[in-house]
Image (cartoon, rainbow, N blue to C red; front, top):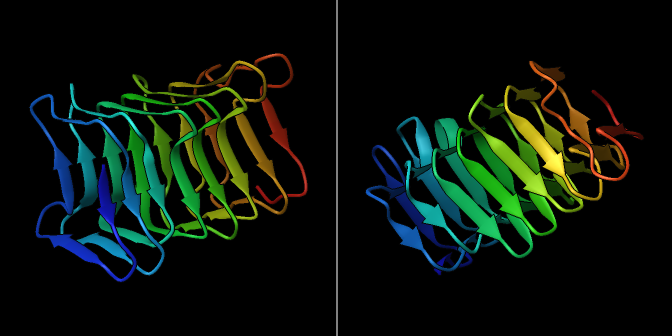
Length: 193
């Protein structure tokens, strides 16, 4: 695992964290409350094609890039939420062209979390969770969500926005790429889109 403990700072000129050449983090990347992962470059965390984070990414602090907080070209897996933002902030967006898969949610923003950029799932991207592909609850994605790939869930909606969750930049689904499990493709209630 890779842990940036409370009060810690990890910074870089191009990336704060970069996984390349089929690198693997067998555990999680964890950025604790009051800690910072930041770069003056475009992307804070970069996961290249063939590289993997097998324990997911959790953030309760600040992850900051000039354009993107996370650029995933590889694989991020977790037995919980593959990317879990709990009372945390992402300065920049998330771009996914690989696989983000969690046993609960692919990506979740909860408990007053915020993302200043756009969540972009590109044509080769898949975001999957058993309960929901993407969950936005009592949190805000300022740049909205653009889906060109697949948001998928086995038992719930591909996208779930609830409890005053907000996609301030709206929702653009370029394909029929938001798929449902047993229930709904998209569930939007008590929210702003």
